[in-house]
Amino acid sequence: QPQDDRALRLALATEIMGKTAAWLAADDDAQWDEVFQHFRSYHEDWQRRGFIAMFRRLLDEQRVPERVMAYPDGERRLTNVLHLGELLQVATQEQPGMEGLLRWFTDARLRPDEDSDEQQLRLESDTERVQIVTLHKSKGLEYEIVFLPFCWDSKPKDAKGPFSFHDEARPEMPVIFDLAAQPQHLPQADKERLAEELRLLYVGATRARYRCYIVWGGINGAKSSALGYLLHQQQWMTDRVDEVPPRIAGADDDALCADLRALNPPGDLFEIAALSLETPPPVVAQDAAPAVFTARKFSGRIDSGWRIASFTGLAARRDQRTGPAEPDYDAATAVEPSITEPRVVDPNSMFAFPKGAQAGIFLHELFETLDFPTASGVELDQAVTRLLRKHGYAAETWQAAVSTLVQQVLDTELDRDTGLRLRAVGSVRRLNELKFHFPLARLDAAPLNEIVTSFSPDPDDLPGLDFDQTRGMMLGFIDLVFEHGGRYYLLDYKSNHLGNRIEDYALEHLVPVMRSHRYDLQSLIYAVAVHRYLRHRIRGYRYAEHFGVVYYLFLRGMDAARGAEFGVHAAKPAQALIERLDALFGGDLQ
View 1 (tube, rainbow, N blue to C red):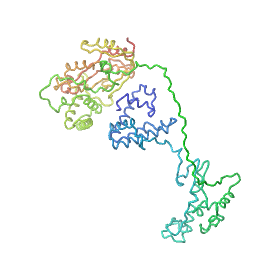
View 2 (cartoon, helix red, strand yellow):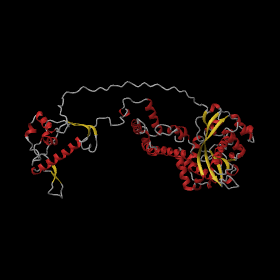
View 3 (cartoon, rainbow, N blue to C red):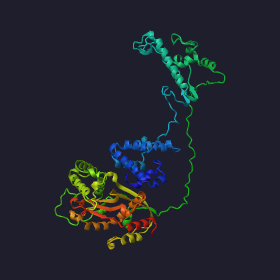
């Protein structure tokens, strides 16, 4: 749910994501826009390409391994993160889709399978393990202690099978494969076998940093081994490698040890010890005494009066308080009873289009994604069809009606004096779903009621505000902010169903809806947010010159042929009203 600001902030504050309190508190719109775009993209990646593709991309782009490894137990943490990712990927085979996988994960955390090998904690590093590697693989590596238990194991070449060797007399064929095992080639092949064993012995014996253990003795195969050649030969290479002195072939351990002692230089470079055949007792790990932890006592004071406020929280009754503010998508409570219900309604018209929050989400996303100047014809029809299917609506039923609605909305003249139409607003001159925060000093319902009603032409028709004293931040989402002719306009899309005729969306019917749902208060909060923003961004900003109009578009009832007569509620708040609200929210007006 990348649109859930509270959940996203909590995620960013985790040690995995590593954002600091200062970073989270920064009032940087560009920074937060980038974050939202990243997480929307991860969300889409999960839907299109699957969990593990999204997971690996998130780890890489958010530099999770680098951040986690900076902790003292970084290897442990990173191993756990990667392990959990693997478990989740495996679970997708039986739990396709986001919701199913999240339910599985929640259940696995609450009721772990103690008998599952896959869910056992993994060793974060191999550095503490006894490592068994081949001599070939060990080249170039170093180990504190090395055991070479099989240096005596050797098998000389014989005439029973094919072998290969190098023929220096035939450079055009450097490697000869003798499949017939001809006897005249056997000495050269065995010589090369011994050379390779000598090379591997050197590799193994030089891997040790502190100590190297080598098992040696008159064991079967030792006489033809590389170690036998090095330690017990009394002459250099003969014509036949296996023509070794009988000394090693028939010598007992005492005689072999005497050869080794003769090789040991002064200072005892190596030690000769008999290998015990007794099985040593098993080593039992001793559990260390568990550490005793005590919780520190909290002596500070938590300010419970600070909170994040929103229009929804201020307008709702005390018994209807909701959670954190979210974009206003015309929830079910905003559906109006029809003023007139004709007996016959076109089942494929926008008057018959489903009502409620889901319809609002669909229409908001549609207008967010469209490029207004080019939204027509085949391009528009394809965009509408794609989003209808995404939101679970029958495209063949509603595509024509929705495409017509879009064209009516974009081509409706919102202002006769300037000829303003949304069709003329390009993507570089608009901001979609503009999220804002601004500081909120101590705010009570009474002074806010007083200011708003004092500027209302019909104050008795406004439902009174009743909320607890609030201090903290004001949060909101503006559907659209755009610039036209040097002025900045606010716009809110409304999918509310007011009736089955366009006449039901005339201005006299829109005003009661604006008042009953306190959209008037919502528009004022939005206006203050944009007023503050423009004041900081435009040199020489003047409200009368730069601030435009606040539009509420009731989409179902708009008709380009009739202009702003239907479906359009337009108002520019008085400058004095905005300045008084600005002062009230800032704590300069009590």
